[in-house]
Structure formats: structure tokens, C-alpha cells
Amino acid sequence: QTVRQIAGLALRRESNALKDSVLKSAGGALAPAAGGASFSSSSRAAGSMTVRDALNSALDEEMERDEDVFILGEEVAEYQGAYKITRGLLQKYGAKRVKDTPITEIGFTGIACGAAMQGLKPVVEFMTWNFSMQAIDHIINSAAKSYYMSAGEIKCPIVFRGPNGAAAGVAAQHSQCFAAWYSSVPGLKVLAPYDSEDARGLMKAAIRDPDPVVMLENEILYGESFEVSPAVEDKDFTVPIGKAKVMREGSDVTLVSFGKMVGYCLEAAKALEKEGVSVEVVNLRTLRPLDRETIASSVRKTHKVVSVEEGWPQSGIGAEILSVVSEDCFDDLDAPPERITGVDIPMPYSHQLEAAALPSVEDIVSVVKGMA
Image 1: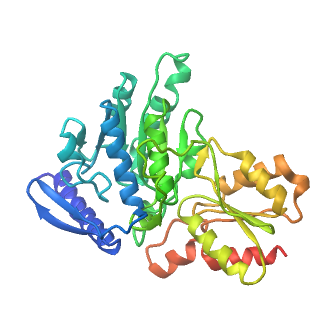
Image 2: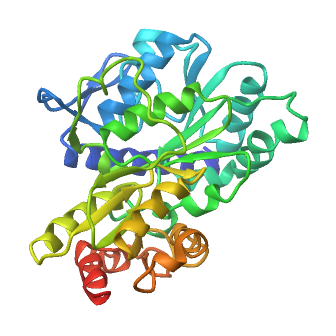
Image 3: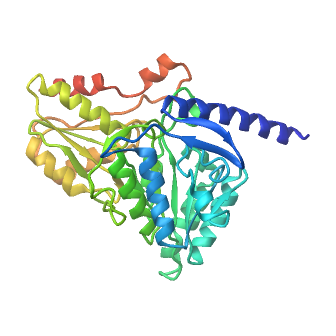
């Protein structure tokens, strides 16, 4: 065997061990089966849905609705998906529409871009968005810019999806948030779901959208279960791209966030309520195009704002939020806007240092109290 082959086998063994660990912690179990692995999830409570099931059902229904939709990526087929988001789809739609690829992001992303330009609707899975750096030329120069550079002649209806940001104990090269990277690019639409309603509705909207869409999910949230209404389970349910959602009404301060940090904001809001502070929580859902009006409307009501994100501070989403507030509703502020971010360092491997490098509920509570 060549050094490259040996390294590839070692990487696959390490990757599979990590995924098995993550799935067990999320309540799932891997079991050998003919032709690959099967996924067994915990029983679903009535009216609730995990983020994993929300994404899986959205993909299933959109593939059934439109035969031009197909999925490709590493281990999406025989292994049922690295995080079981694509489980069952190979068996239902076949290898023509659910395609395993080699470990070559630049290769299969380029193939997907070409397929989209010819009228198909690919959904590209990155095992983690950190690996998208191998394919970033195609995402930005091929997908995002072709419509503009062709004067509207070449469309690229494509979805790039996968887990973004910190997971647990996977160190600096597998933990960074790409929200600021991709949301700075004209030609892309960038989505960041928090709960099952977000995940299901945004995925379906992304697949139906005529433009290239980046879907920044979170690995830790895949196993989380959220209440969903019958409307969310409807096959035609979508979440509008470019529209934020007020998750909690409040009158004293606005917390603006996306993805996993929305949950932290909601926890902080509950803690602050016990101390007489009324907190409004805005879930951005879409990072590009940004819903400036919902942000400004909330700040005009509460007169204080804190942005919360996992990513680094410089040129981050929080910096953009505070800029929007300064431009759109500066005169409505009663205190300087604040931002909470990850620490400005590569992610440590140590569990204790990793926790210290990421925002916490306590951080949010402390910052809000300091604005009084």
C-alpha cells in the first residue's frame, strides 16, 4: 500500500470511531447490516421531531417531489450518512440519486456545480464544513458567481450542507464556524437552522431555491428533539429565506443569534426573567440575506442589543449585526451594543479549554446585567 492509501485508511477508521461516538451520545445506535449500516433512533414523541429527522424528512420529500434532486458526498449512501441525515434514501431512490464519493471535496463539488448548471438540483453533503475549504473555489467562483458573470444565462440551483462550528473534542481543524466566511459572498444564500422547524423548513426552501444555498447545521443539535406543529410536518411547509424569527418576546434587551447559540440565548432569557429582566430573542435563521428589519424593529422596542455567536470576533456575524444596528436604529439605543463571540484562538482540544473558548449561558447573563 502507498503512504496515501495507509493514511486514508487511518483517517476513515478515526472518522468512523468519532461518528459512532457522536451518534451514541445523540441517542442513536449503529448496527451492521447487509450493504452497509442501519440507523436506529429513539422513539419519536407525538408532536416532536429531532433535527436529524427534520433534515432527513425534508430531503426525502423533496427528492420525491422533484426527480432532478440528488444527493452526493462522502458516505451518504451505503453508510446512510456520516450523521445519518441521509438514512434510508439510498434504499428508496437508488444509487443514481444518492451517490457515495471518494474523499475529494474539490472533485465532487465541481461535479455537482456542473450538474446544477445543466438543470439538475444537487445537494452536496460535507462531512463537516471544515472540509469545504478543499472545495471553496467551486462554491464561490463556480456556484456563487456564474449567474452574474453569465448575465443570467447560467443558473446554479445547488445546496451545500453539513455540520458547522464546534462539535465536541475535535480540536482546531474540525471546529471552526464558517458563517462569516460564506455570508460575505455575493451570490450565495446562507442559512443557519436552530430547531427542527428551522431545519425542515429551511432545507426544503433551499432545495427549491434557484440560487446556490449554503446550509450551516450543527452536529450537537442533530439529536436534539423539538416540538413541531402539524403545519411543520406538512409536505409543502417551508421557512422563508431572508426572514428572522422572534423566538421570545421581551421589552428590556434584544439577543440576536443563530444556530446552537439560539438555545443558549433562550436559556439566558429564562434565567434573567427570574431577576426581572425581560429578554427578546431573535433567531436569524438566514445570515445572507440578513433580515435587517426584524433586528431593527426589536432594538427599537428594547433599546439594547447583544449579538451572540460561536465564531471569532474579528469580521464576524456579530460585527455585522452591530453595524446594522448602528446604521438603522442608532438613535433608539440606550446603551452601547454588545457582542459575545468565541475566543480569538484556534479551538483547543482539551475539554476544559474548549468550554472556556466558547460562549456560555453565564456569559450572556453577565453581559446583559452589565448593560443595566
